[in-house]
Image 1 (cartoon, chains in turn blue, green):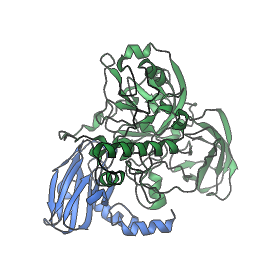
Image 2 (cartoon, rainbow over the protein chains, first blue to last red):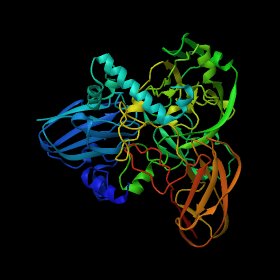
Image 3 (tube, rainbow over the protein chains, first blue to last red):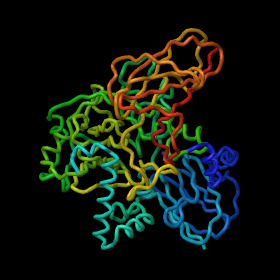
Image 4 (cartoon, rainbow over the protein chains, first blue to last red):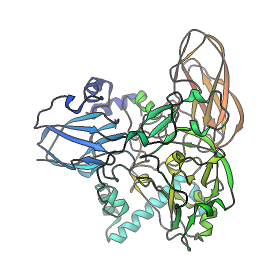
Length: 136
Length: 413
């Protein structure tokens, strides 16, 4: 793959943590600050999930169609990540790594439907790190 | 397929995938095409054939993830993963001492009592399934080999530098590797005592860790002379962080195949799959096609890599010095190492130092009369099978097999 190809790929992926331009957003979204210290999000669009060994809580969340922010806090002792996947398992957005104590956000626009939120690190999904996001 | 063919990974992977799809489709009374469509929309349960029960929510205390001391002067800390700092090897010998050896735990170090531990060997591929105690394993003929164990994601952080996007998983530099003398019993010896069938196809060790790490290998690899069940490391009882009481050694393969704390080995006449070779430890990206039932080509052998025995962002004094490093390959013996002091414009051969053991590594050095300035030192190696280190490698989402040349930042002042 060339750098040019990659630039195109990056343009298609509107993901936090995917490009240098997002680093400012990352600086806000990540960090060891208190849970309450995270950016304020409107109640209609924010979905908050806690990650740990080996779970997502709650396992069922809901949102309205449109702009949605999924906020994931890693309260575990080891690294986790988060992938938001649509029908057929296709990734819609993701954060590659969430260190222990850190919080990450996925901001994306989604349609009605049922989405899967999971940790893609080896064995974590199988062990229970999976949740369902219902959009309607 | 002949047993020798099982050592050709491309042939083997294609044959086993085809067989798996055909068998599952027939069992479900559907077509091969329909079954592949079902797989595309399903997750782990489709592979394992079982629904997975939810686990209780529980957070692990961070302090007990790894047992051995991992001081910051020798390790980068990634929680349950500890990366070796390469500068710690500059004054060391061929093997990495146990106290400096990197740790890759998928969850945390398992605590296993040797007195109650049992190894269960079972499945359609053995005529006589049975258990082995720790004492029985120790009493069998002993073999020692020197080989590397390396995480499949070693070098993962460099994908971000090359592509501007981060691959999933621990952001290792190049220190997720170590070479040790491993002592144990041949896996073949254990399988023969279980009367392994000539029709056996796959062998899947399973760990007793929290996540039950399990990943199959072809019978040809399982029966190889240097595929071992290991109980000692560098002359010492295998430490808990490295798999006590017994781990698997699968030379040249990605680290995850070297299952730690092994408690069960399934031997099958049919191809075996687990999430560890269908969801994870597979190559997923624009340059890799899905390989149903896996999301991409499954990893086996490690790529060629090289590392300098220097701190990352090293500061060296101006004047003559001796640069040192090591290179390794999962598929052969290193035959050539070259170093560039000028960002890849010109290359000069490094001196290789014996021993040079296949599927371990070779140490090398180079005289350098450093002038003041900032450098991006590069090393590239080739093995005797013709594998080399390219300038770049295709991106894959899980960040595996980063075998490209790495620029090591150094300032001479």
